[in-house]
Image 1 (cartoon, rainbow, N blue to C red):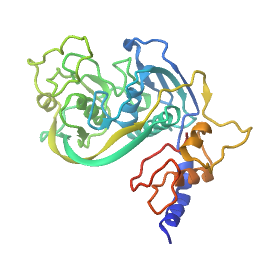
Image 2: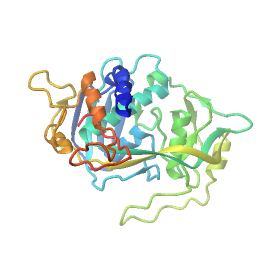
Image 3: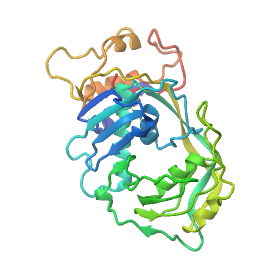
Image 4: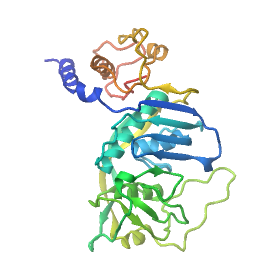
Amino acid sequence: MSVFCQVAVYLLLALPAIAQAQAFATITIKPARSADARNTRLQVLPNGDLIASGVPVASLLSYAYGVPVNSSPRLSGLPGWRETYDIEAKAPANTIPAGLPGSEKRGRMQAMIRGLLADRFKLVMRVEQKTMPVYALTVASGGPSLQKSAIAETDCVFDTATPESCHNFIVGRGHPLNARAINMDDLAQYIENWTDLPVVNRAAVSGLFAVETEGWIPMRLPPPPPGNAPAARFDDLPTIFTVLRKLGLELKRQEDILPLYTVERIRPNDDNVPLPATQATSGPRPNLFPDRGEHYRQRHRFTSRATISAAEVFVMAVMTLPCEPSDRCEPDQPPTTSHRARPLLG
């Protein structure tokens, strides 16, 4: 059996799972009403709804791909434009069923936001797995010294404008580890904003915790914006190693394989009115066999929708296969031996 046929068979077997992938039921994106960064807000509600005010795409990318907000070697190719948006995205019913573990809930939300970025901002993201030095967040020899949170995961609301909300930290000098309901993944991603290496969670401790520590000396700081005063000094603060030790945790330097993300394409959103994410049933269906590849897709873009047919999934997945030199390639796609992920829709 040829490689193409093997891929086709695999895709057909995988179609039910692909076709049922979650997506937002309705999406509204408008230019931000306020350009003041102090009004930036990102909310993820328990039912899976997304509400954002004045957010840049960098904030959406950070949440969707689990990378720091500050510059990081794990995410490159960010756009130079600085447009911000107000977004309301409604999740379908039962997107987040009762009893779903926190990690799975976040994973579903990340996948849905990735879909939003691909469909509405035409994001094309290249992912490379690379072995690199990291800090592993682990439990110290004496065991963890962590206080359970009074907030249950089922009641969690992620809200960047409310420091006391779940999975969020209270801002302070030296970035103290002050939070009301965070897990170890939250902790690792937060401190990675100011460490000199990526941080991965290897603590094997589950649940939500309330923490409160003093600030610490950042290993690195992003450069201040042009015209701003130099960054404050933190020489009087302890290191992150000392702060974590008080929580019964530690950072161990080791090597690990991490995904590195490169933004290959993203453009500002041009939606100015609410658009349903479900394609209208009337009117002609889009041609699934374009003659001119990307040029055709730009003229006849698929409308975002919660589900797509199995046939569409199969054809669009085949369209994203790498084009070998011996294959017949699209006119705008030179032969290549590397695969670049493209959004299925758009």
